[in-house]
Image (cartoon, rainbow, N blue to C red; front, side):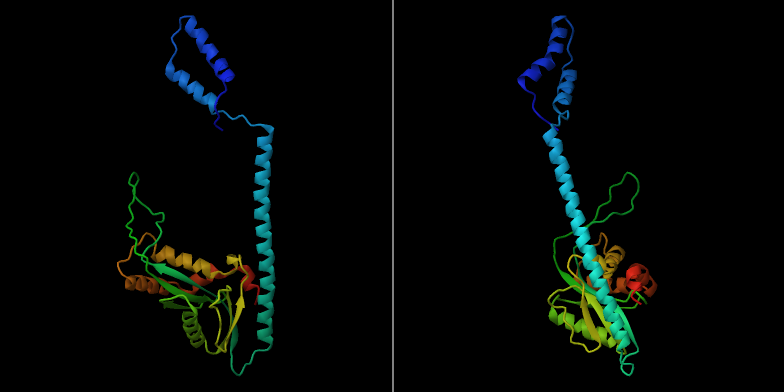
Length: 265
């Protein structure tokens, strides 16, 4: 911690060098400067300083612990709710209309012509360069994945709103027409279901770890969008579709198949 020396401390510090000069010795100014910097930058903690540091760190630790505890409590409550909904649908499933019950997780994400620079391989001693521009144009992907089987449904849309959500839900319903779908998603205002075979269940706030499709977005960005700049939006859509198609059911299962989800069945 840096601090300025008082007049008394400076006199005490210089006294040794003054005696050397009076004795006819040569004083190296660089050595004197280095010694002064070391003296002024040394740590002199008062007891009150240490107390404040301990209090600050304790407060941060408690805040993280409270957030973690709240998230865990909400997660456990949501997990019980999901299990209850699945059990209720299994017990009351209309077998004349549906073959089975699916638990799927839904979310949407934006992909655009601008992407964040990421780490990459290069030859030793060479600093890699990544192209960039400032045109902010995006397309939005609505997706739903089933961790148990790895099956999925994705739709690329120009907007992120209720109309786009309804188009996606209709596509999802048509993809699995003979199954009752329990669709877990966050509580965004446009997440509303008008499909007969889709039942929405909402994940609580501040628990993104409960939605495994978040990891699918990361995988798509890593595979197709890292350090990339696109000249047109159509090229963004093309890359997006190619990357999504490259995700096999086994890959999706390995990314999203968490123990607490599989324990619901």
